[in-house]
Image (cartoon, rainbow, N blue to C red):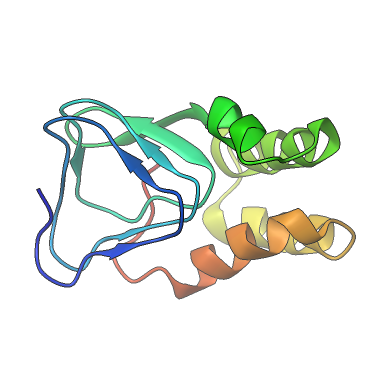
Length: 123
């Protein structure tokens, strides 16, 4: 169930009965759990569930299936921790993520998505 103008990145998995509000964006390789209501933007690589959707973890199993290396998945997990577990304000987290992305290319889509978010991020 997708509202109008929803943007889905490559390899997004939407489980049964999941829905996305109009104009929401879901980043590449994200996993949206069963019966989840996406009302805000979900960054790439994130597994989100709930009503409304909340970030739960990194979609590490999906990333493995798509050929991401353990090193890349570790970098993504570290970026996830900065954004969701560090208790930093979004602006401060973005500064830290930009530093990380300068040496780890796999994080560039994650950081770019955050900068382009228009509906705010699931947090």
